[in-house]
Image 1 (spheres, helix red, strand yellow):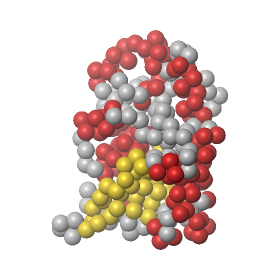
Image 2: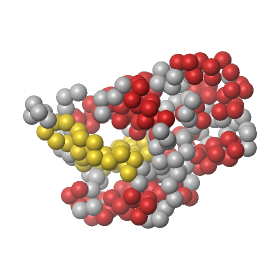
Image 3: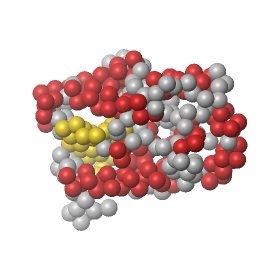
Image 4: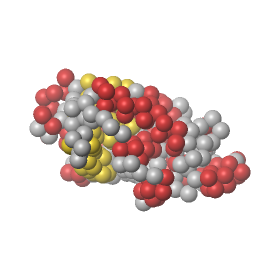
Length: 255
């Protein structure tokens, strides 16, 4: 991919959500369905998620003004939007000049018929689909009405094209979801299926963890992105804010 990249590109998972808490309660209770009153798009941050997002925003705010985000692009899902707003509000002297842009291509992976089901619920209600997913693997498996990782990657390709076209040379923060973080890494680090799933199996992306890239000149004088930070948690650790890393949905959990 040849492009004029942002000066810095940060990719962040949203803070802990009420959905993460409800999912944990349903799984520990052996329930088939996660008890949530909201649509997935409307699930807010938990109280801890607000604290995590605030700690992250304060960390960004302590950076020199010339190193802070100039543009924040986030998923339209409420938990990501709340995280992005809390971060943007705390970006020091440039807070009023930071552009916040919502982009539906950063939305959570769609789980279709498996939405709101626990791992037990998936096995109980859709045993054949569960077996198919285990056989095909999450990278290519698409539940009825939902998306595979490949589907997510396809929409992210156009997002990256927009970022290079509109925000070349600027400092861009992306706030989204766990699958988005991993799929962006797949694209930016030129991985294959095995490599990204190996990373996924190592553990979930922590809430408000920072993965970042810096632009530099390549061997042919084109611009490349160099990995700078991966799942960086110092902003939470410095604020003594608990770290959480539950998946957003059981269907996104490890096989």
